[in-house]
Length: 226
Image (cartoon, rainbow, N blue to C red):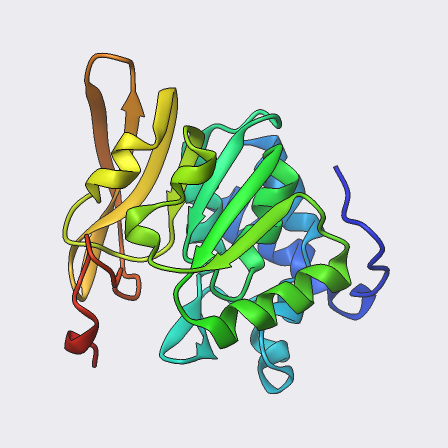
């Protein structure tokens, strides 16, 4: 497991390793692949320079356009719930800063990621190019309708909170596939893990959380944003 050409990040190596030990392992994250990926990905590169000293703290940070980079623990929990082995085709809804996308690039075979806000996607692409991430395809669009061109997906992860699971995403989940999505109200959700066993969608809900709103045709209306 490694990133590409990027050789920097040593200045932040110590806080990054401390983050993994205290915020992830110390709070019950056990998947060794998730732990290693988050040891490797330099989260400080995905936030603006003025906030880099906060990059490995235990909370989300603003990335502009009323969006945030997720709390490290929440990224780890969601990735662990997916149970990735390394060869999956994965769909990510909400590229955001690109941090979680970069983590997923080390955990899955191919990542397709959709972001509705173009300037945020362009910044994420530049950072991932710096890191040498090569197995990620990005596009601007409405994530609630998915990316049918490459469906079905072995795994789907949604990085914004919706009122319910968007139907198109269920339809694009492969038999045996898993989806993780925050579902609930606009200001608080719970993580929902869905498994498609070929007959029914089995659902487990755990881990209260708070994400930005999942805006789109099958999510919250854009004109309702704060």
